[in-house]
Structure formats: structure tokens, C-alpha cells
Image 1 (cartoon, rainbow, N blue to C red):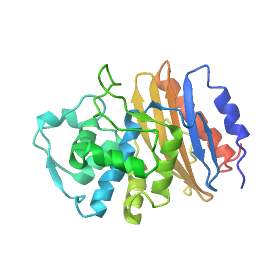
Image 2 (tube, rainbow, N blue to C red):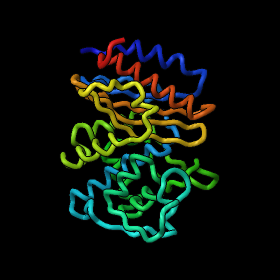
Image 3 (cartoon, one colour):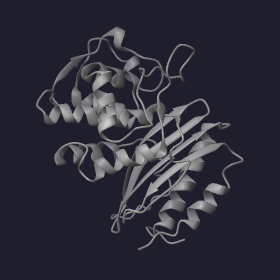
Image 4 (cartoon, rainbow, N blue to C red):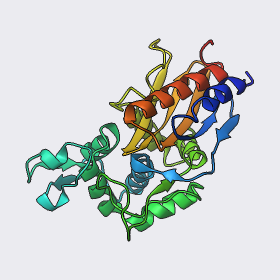
Length: 265
């Protein structure tokens, strides 16, 4: 089925009064539509997706294992989202635990532990291999945007649709690792963005990685139905509130599902 992008375009045209929105969508048949697709936005926590891919690539090479254990140290605890900064120093976590916490509740402490495990340079190399040419990971996650003297982590909608496509198509890592990553993305706890209007019928499935900072609301993910899988990246900035951003993302996803014929208008 050929996509009717006019539906999505009309929806996005109405969002300009609320903030700056970038979006990229790949339909189940492979058609791509974007608005500001190659424009850089602050990535916030959507940058945790290439970290997850890098970790799974290391698992594929038998250099890491999901049952590897890590003892939480006080120095590990980072500000911002997550629960580990409130947990007992000395608790034992597996690599699997850290990946789950990084993706499902965007735990910054878990994320920074994983960055140190694999190294910032290797993550950057992974991003380059996955053709994320206009996105970067240059600093740790501390619950705020970059300040003077720090380099911001940036993302473009097109780069993140490409990286989602590499997972869905089984090219980002081994087939089993890509399936594990999709399963982890499906455990996303925030269903107010991409997942808000996804039908609850059994043949529908969705997953995503959110990103949030003051004025910034992002989500990158997939929606699967009997027609196939849609990949979508929506990045918003200059917003008055997170609530506004979440509604923009939910409405954009709804319009994208209608445009691609996954649901009726």
C-alpha cells in the first residue's frame, strides 16, 4: 500500500505554534517521509539506543555476557532519570539489568556504567558504521543539557529512523541480539508518546526510547501490525512543557499510522 503522506503533513503543519518539530517515518513498505529530517536536535536519552547496540555487538563477540555482574558504587550514581541513584551501594546488577534500566526507565546511572564498559569511542564508531553521520555521543548523562565547555549530544530524525531500521532488519547486530533489542524497546514504561494511540489489538506491537530535557521531548521507536513495521523518530524543542511535547509525538504517530495505512483515518 502506497503511503498517503498528506495526512501526516497536515498534522505536522499545525504543530509549528507549539515548538520546533523534526520527524522521520519509514513505512512498512520502505517509503520514507521526513520534515527537518537532517536537522540536528538535542538528543537527550534517545542516544541510549546506539549504546545498547554497541553493548549487544560486544555480546555477539563474546567480550561481554548478559549475566556479567556489576557491583554498584556510590561514584556511579548520576543525576537525572532513573532509580539506581537511590539504591543501595554494593547491590549486584547484571548486564541484562543495566540494559533494561537504561531503555525502559532511561536510568542515567545504568547508562553511564554501560558507556564506561564499552567506551565512548566504540559507541561513536558504531554510530558511524550505522550511517548516523549527523548524530553524536560526546558526554555522559547527567540529567541536563550541555553547559559552557561541554559538547551536546545531537540527533537527527533521519539518523534515528536509520538506526531503528537496522535493528528491525536484523543488521545492527546478530539476529538474536536485534530481537532482544526490540523486546527491550517494547518494555518502554512511558506510553504517552509513540505508544499512546497504538491499537491494543493482538497484532499490534510497539516499542520506543524516549528522551527528555527542559524544552526537549523526543521519542524514537517502531509500530508493528499485520502490515509490517513502521519506524518513526520525532524530536521536539522549544516547548512550553513536556505535556505539550508528548501530545505532539502521540498525534504525529497517529497521523503516521493513518498515512501508512496501518489504521483507518
